[in-house]
Amino acid sequence: MNIFFTEENFSFDEDFKNNQKLTYNDLIKYNSIQNALKTKKSICLTISLIYLMLGDILNLPLYGGLIPGHIYVRYKDETKCCINIETTLKGFEYYGYMSKAGLDVYGSYKNSYGKELNKYQVIGAYLNNLGNLLISIGELNKAEILLKKSIKYLPSISEPYINLGILYDELNKPNLSIKYYFDSLKINPENDFVFTKIGIIYFNQSRMIKAREYLEKAIKINKDNKEAIDFLNKTR
Image (cartoon, helix red, strand yellow):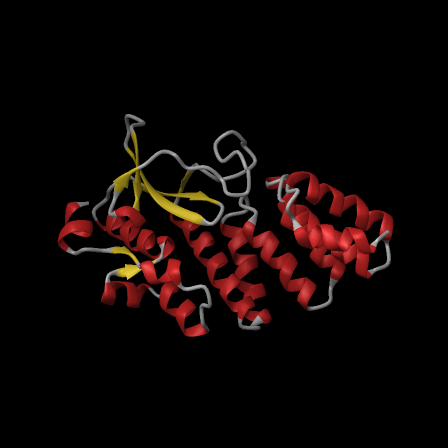
């Protein structure tokens, strides 16, 4: 750990946090392992991947740890002793992870949040990140392939289902979009973003009773959800 974070000085790239308008080249840079090895700065996913690859070479009991929107590393040996390693904070030992989406990241057997991920599951998280990147630049066919592979490797996180919902919405395939949004709710049933998107699809189909039902669910979870409030007012 000292070699990686102190001597080699791998660290979180603060420019990523401060950059509110990421370009395509920015997104490529932050997801590039090669660039991270060169600059020794990147985002949590890329730094954690490098750390896990080194652990694999050294035969160390390291695993990925995932919460919505973030990944870290966990050391867990045969005695079941666990140490959380926060790769964005120079390897700081940290245990206060909570889901930004209000999801119980430790309590549910239905999801993989807060649990040890093997190398294939970490690849699933990486593919989801790349799929999301491809959606942002309009490469929907490529994104679809990666997101479905992400689900194959890591079926118990909600993000790739949500991203596929967004993708099919953009492709004007509302039935597929709703299917994947509902799949995500099986893992994280308290996501107001997903309820909003479902409500908007029903609104666009002129199914106002269904639209109100899901928009009201979104607002119940997040009373400040402006998009849900605006569309709910349109249904009246």
